[in-house]
Amino acid sequence: MSEDYNITLFRLTQEAFSNILKYAHAKNVWIELKRLDKGQRGDISGDRLELLISDDGVGFDVESQAFKSGFGLIGMRERVRALGGTFSVRQNHDRGTRITAVIPIVGSQSQPQNSLTLSQ
Image (cartoon, rainbow, N blue to C red; front, side):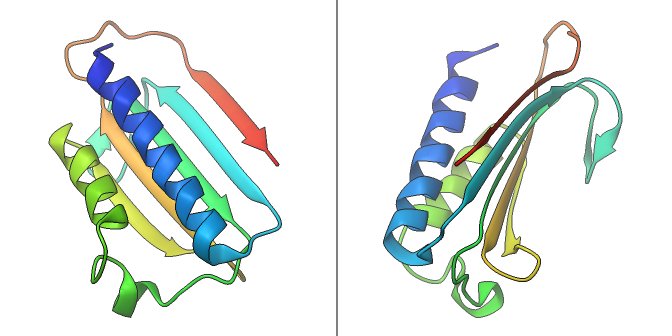
């Protein structure tokens, strides 16, 4: 897998945690990174990476505030798009925010499903 994937995943996680620390006042943060070679999520099927980061913080009005000011979420979205992926920000059930990035892995050999879940 290209170093571009590693850098993108690191930067997405770094920016998400920065936003959570600055704005969310969350007690818990969940991060899940999966590599899947079967099924489909949205418009992307086959070999792909799925990154989900969610918190139980105060959240914000995604419709009116996301991508309107600052460069954090915009930069995250553009990094994912540069790799042909999709990026979304939405409310996380009752409280908090959920970020989802799905990035196709182009030109790779399929490998078994790998998953890493961290909780704090």
